[in-house]
Length: 281
Ligand code: GLU
Image (cartoon, rainbow, N blue to C red; front, side, top):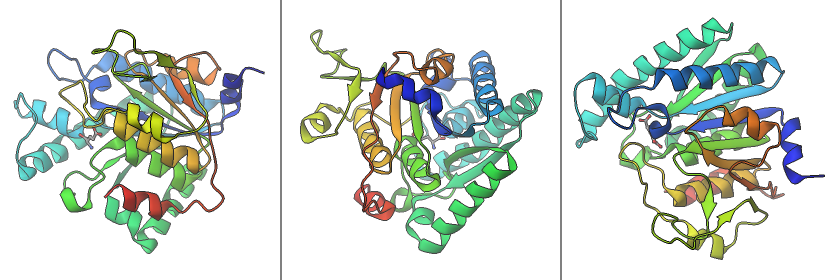
């Protein structure tokens, strides 16, 4: 059996969308056509009986455009204000689009602190469980309006892996502006080879991750994606990194077609989420 076929049977899926996949490169404003496709793809998976969680970036990028700021905010308070504005705008659009397909979207905002604290973590876990039981589609982001350097995840790649581990997801899909994992930076090295499947994440592989991100929105580079892959696969989920330029790729991935890099689950018996979160500090 083709190893990709196993993706057809996934029951609980976390999908992470980066800011650059949600906005027009030229203006930084929301790409509504793409958002519509995203919501339709997720609604259809939900209609197939799968639990769906969306981790969406974009709060800061959207908020700054709303306020006419044409660059990444530079102070913490400016970033937090932009996030407050942009997060509400994002959710308004998601609510509208999901309701067109008879789906209920729910907002969950997290910080690293909530995940490290035992009581908060348990609460978050219970809330996700209840939301999925009710048939809602949780839309998760970092709580950028209150998180500062000490308490933030800082990027949604790791946040989405933590969510996948917390809720016992069996698949995490990271969609960004890259096709997947290469042996080297494909923009700099023409001999860089594409890696289709990763069975184990070892030091050589971690060395291939470059921490830079090509886009001027969002924060995650390849290093954060590999760190996310370590968390997700150790928790027992498969993970796919693929290009989010066309969100139709979501059903293609889940129907077992060859898209992106697939990291195979490698569940660790003694997996303890806090250990992984603390390593992110
Ligand atoms: N939480 C940030 C936002 O919504 C994005 C973080 C990231 O791009 O990874 O703007």
